[in-house]
Length: 115
Image 1 (cartoon, rainbow, N blue to C red):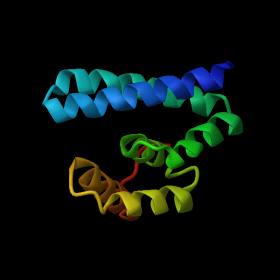
Image 2 (cartoon, rainbow, N blue to C red):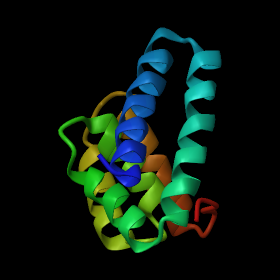
Image 3 (cartoon, helix red, strand yellow):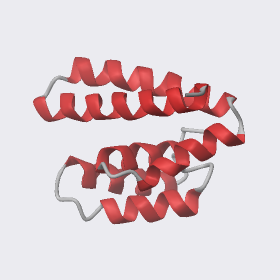
Image 4 (tube, rainbow, N blue to C red):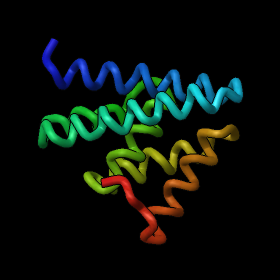
């Protein structure tokens, strides 16, 4: 397993941990996972095109929370694919749907800070 595969596996793991923590109301644990996700994203960006494409591929992951997070972190890299995934996720009636809608609104309004 190469470095990018390890980063992607960890991105998935931390994303799942983040959403499980949020569902339980454990925001401290959720925030810890987000900090790790941000670092993983930086490492994937630093890996260049291969890292960005690996992250973008997660927009097709079987888990909704992983598709959401990959789309959020890939919006500026591939807005068409990311927005399409986010739009599908807005149909979710839970927190995922709300987060997807918020990401779309922030992106469309120009208030998007994730590179």
